[in-house]
Image 1 (cartoon, one colour):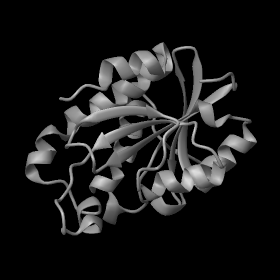
Image 2 (tube, rainbow, N blue to C red):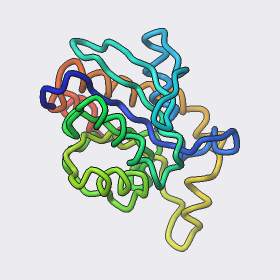
Image 3 (cartoon, rainbow, N blue to C red):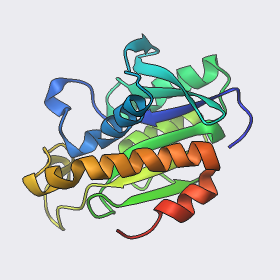
Length: 193
């Protein structure tokens, strides 16, 4: 991470009650969990986002839920980053990932979008890929199955049973990256659960 005055933690998802408990919105759930750990709620609005400002370790952090729908997630983040002069190196993006089993967490940096439309939007808008990403596994429906239906589908009873634990682990991974650095967070959280 570089030396911007502020950092951004963005949880990706889709706005509206219809999407609230879907796999694609796990990023929203994680950023809400981080806010609640600091007794905050994402009750401010700016740049087509809901946000809160937190002090995490030595960092002043904007916790953000872009409300532009997943495929356009980059635009609200770019507006925030531009206004507050935040470098892409100082942005952590939390999102669902079908290539990881449900609840598995993987922290990556400077990687391609891996087919995720929200991440694709961010990398295209910023024109570079140097953000940190916390990938939160939502499992894969299997070949030939309905991918869109899977990510936009609600959590199964088995998933709900471990959802809090999964969201908590992802929120702890993000806090660790902010407080102790990305490498330490990777070493601690990039293990197969």
